[in-house]
Length: 349
Image (cartoon, rainbow, N blue to C red; front, side, top):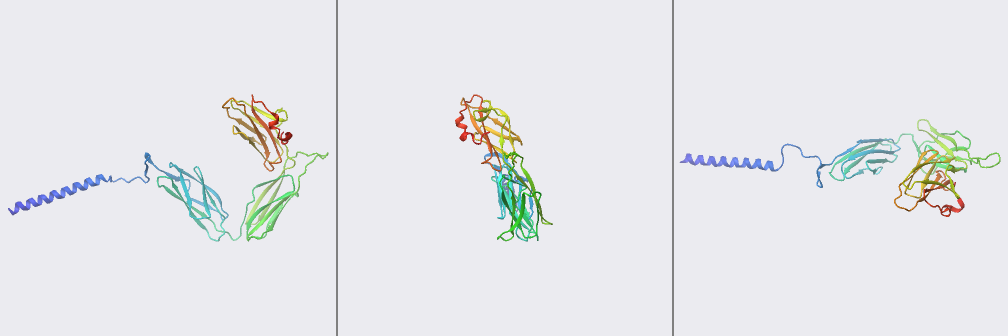
């Protein structure tokens, strides 16, 4: 009798163990843990099956002590991304997939680092860019001087900032009409480079304005082992800008384009260093083709209203004084000269 009771108890205990094992198996299946790893990024609930990705063109940037800008290309299938720097001397800006990193000059004697964290707007993906900047050297000199500077025909000067802790410079100019010198300032470790030009009053033998091309000089500032920079100085004389191949309608030159949309080249004669063009109409596109050609392109007209526009071609160094204008019109447009006379034709070719 005792043996039967023991046997029943053993069978009951065995049944309980089996039941517990079965429950454990069921519970394990319900959790979805089949031995595979879960995705690193969650799927978009609005787009089932979409996993987010993020990649950067580089994970590190190196800058010299004087700072500057570099770019990182950000690739992601998220709707956007953000970037945050952990240092105020290192800043970021975004334009599409291009992340621009701007670093201030390092005025300390220690190398420094910053970390930029890039995050997707969805999906929790993030990557870091390490920014390293060199320390301030024992002797240094930086300047905001560009490669080219353009003057009008008048006697004038311009100033550029030198951030430096040295005093001795070699400064030369290739032309006597252009001079340069370094002046002290009241700001510590800052000097001023002053470039001066004489008036460029080109005239012919009879005293009339001579439409000569710009003249150039080369200014060089040098200190061995610290700085060796050159500035191309350009100076215009009396500037004239023309569109000689366009026909006159009254006082004004006119370019006729098809109402169906058309593209034509306009010859630009100008003795200034560089020119640009603008239009007062959004149906025109202006594209400088080379130094003497402007391509004017119109979109098709959307209704029966004839169109006219004014194009201004101007000297980039002195746009308010040196320019010419011409009219662009549909071939069936009726021109009213008084609407485009601009004060008796002033500024018109």
